[in-house]
Length: 493
Image 1 (tube, helix red, strand yellow):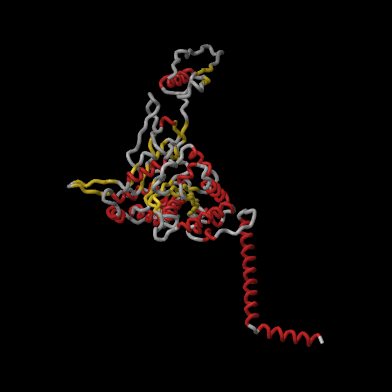
Image 2 (cartoon, one colour):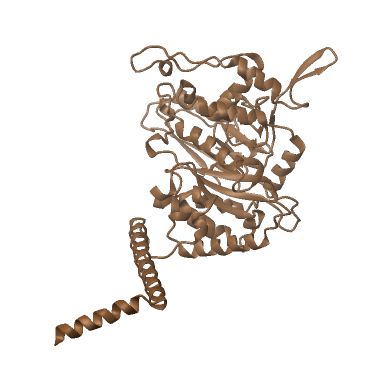
C-alpha cells in the first residue's frame, strides 16, 4: 500500500544520508542557501540605505570605502556616485600594486586643506574657477615633493547630501586631468571632523555672551590637525589651511608657498595677519599700514601649520583641553597667539565678562596655565627660535613667522591698486579702479541740490580727492529766487 511504500522510501533516504558523499552534498547546499540569504539581506539593507540617501539605484560599494583611512570619512560610504567610487577603487588598487614595503611610504611635504561647513558646502566647487587663471604650480617643471588636497567638512557627510554632491563634483574635477591645475596635486581626499550639527556654531554677534559662539571653527581646526598628524592619509610635515575666501592672485602660488616653507623653516606657524588699509591720506586717497607681526587681535587662521613642531602640538592639545571652558570663546587662531604670548611674557588674556559667569551668575574660576606654557616655550622651541642667548644678551625669535605671500586686509573691500604684492588674498573683495578706466568708461555724478552750502562742500571735497567721475552735474530749482553759481568747480582730479 501507499503507506508501506513511503516507509520504505524514507528508510532508504535515511540510509543514503549516512554516506559521506551525501553529507558533503548537504553541507554545500546549506552553505549556498545561507550565502544567498545573507546576500539578499545585504541587498535589502543596501537598497534601504541608498534610498535614504537619494540614490537612484542599488550598487555594491568598493571594499576600500570600509578600510582605513577612508572609513574615517562617511563620504566614501555615503556617495551615490558609482562612477566616482569605481574610479577611486581602481586608483587604490594601482597604488597597492606600486607599493614597495622596503621603500616605505613617500614623505609628503605639504597638504592643502579647504575647510567647509553646512552653509558654504554647495558653493565650494565654484571657488576654484579662479584657479584656471592662476594655477597653483608650473606643471612643466619637475616637482621634488608631492602635495595632496583635502576638502574637510565640519559635520558628517552622510547627514548632508549637499556636501556629498559638492565633494562628488570636486573629485570629478580633480580627476579630469585636462584641467591644468589638478596636475599640481597627487591625491584628493574628502574628510570630515564629525561635529554635531547643534554644536557646529559660528555666531560672531554673540562673541561677548556665548562661550561656544565659535565652537565650529575651533573643533574643525583641531580635527583637521589630528587627521593629518595621525599619518593615515600620508606623512605630512606642513599643511596650508586655505578657506573658501582665500583667492590666488598670482600664477604658481603653491610653488611660491613651498619655497617660503623651505626658506622660513624652522617655524610652528607661517602666515600673515590682517593689515590695515586706512585710506587716510586725502592727497592720494590711500595709505597702507602693515602691522609688524602676527597679532592676536588681527589673526586670520589662513596659515601654514607645521605638523612636526612640538610647540604647536602642545598648544593644540591645550585647545582640546579648553573646549568646555570660557577660553573656547576665543577663535583658535587668536588663542594660539595668546598661548605663545602667555608662555613668553606671562600675560593672561582677558575674556568677555558675561562669558565668565555660569548659569547662576557666579564667576567661573579657570586654571592658571602660565607656568606650563612657559615651560613648553622653553622646551619645545629649537636652537634658532624662542628665547636665545648671545653672550650676555637674551633675545626672542618667534616660532610664528610671517610670509608676505598671504594677504588679508581691513577693510575687506579695496581696489586692486591698493593691494601690495602677494600670491593669495584672504577675506578681501577686490574691485577694478574706475580712475584708470575714466576715459574708456565715463561716469557722471549727479547732485540734487537743495542746500547750496552743502553742495558747495561736496564739490570742494571732490576738488581735493581722487575720484572716478568725468563729469559732475548739479540739479537746482530754477524757481528759487537765487540760483547758486558752482561753475568755479571745474577741475577733475
